[in-house]
Image (tube, rainbow, N blue to C red):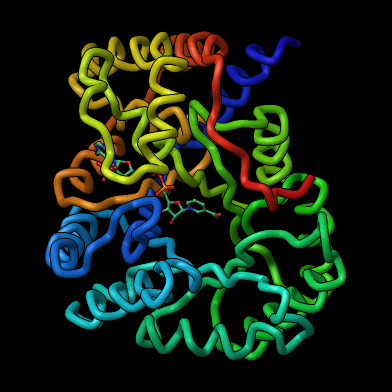
Length: 338
Ligand SMILES: NC(=O)c1ccc[n+]([C@@H]2O[C@H](COP(=O)([O-])OP(=O)(O)OC[C@H]3O[C@@H](n4cnc5c(N)ncnc54)[C@H](OP(=O)(O)O)[C@@H]3O)[C@@H](O)[C@H]2O)c1
């Protein structure tokens, strides 16, 4: 079976199993370096974005205790905590708020995440329901990960948090950790990895999706829009992001993805949808739940509209062929384990 045949087969299986949902990510909420955050300018818009996302039916929210640059550390969680506090209790109870705790070198042992967990729960005003290990330390300190995971399992067993998730790891590590947690009576809910039409490491991504399906673990697709590159229509590339880091990425990826973005645009026009919806529905067709980063109410409305339709197998195959011609891909996360 060729790689393309395998992907089409995965896609056919996942559309039978009915398509996954869509959540949203909040890395940009407090991040200056990559996203150019400015509290005075942005916070009111982010509140409106949050409200629009919820009214459009997006209930899974991803954040992290390390989101927010420098003195703004924890800002994403704090904004979410404030915005959730304005909701009626019933609406709050319908949300799945998932944070990621960073395995910094000074956090180790079974108690290594305790203080970080309490700090996140405080910023999120008690609404934290899923804790995810932000990245695997398997490549440089495997012993550290084991102790931290035991501590996370205890958070679930003691009822302090409902669910556990992982991030930035591959299929081999997933199988090991899944087994270790099960032995302690804790089941793993999700694993998040970079997944998009421009994501690196195709083989590993495909294997992770297949293994996760067998284990019953949901795959969350992060950076599903390649930082916004996949929403740029051919011919409108002059609209560039403000930060230097994103500009550099756009300069490299826009020309390399022209054929792919033209194929996406053709499907979008046929469907009366946006290119962003096409990108997200490719992730959903693979069986993953995309968590696009949102910064405006219009983006939230657009993203949620992807839930109204799905790619046909032919459209999926057309995108898959076009992506093989992309000479450049997104950078891989340096902590991603096998
Ligand atoms: N586990 C990890 O290590 C990890 C790593 C990265 C991200 N994540 C999570 O995944 C989330 C999403 O990934 P990401 O933020 O890196 O990037 P992304 O989702 O690929 O791109 C987000 C950007 O795409 C643009 N966009 C979103 N909706 C749009 C729409 N409807 N129309 C046009 N443009 C739209 C926006 O750019 P503009 O606002 O500039 O228009 C937005 O800021 C993060 O927020 C975070 O929660 C996790």
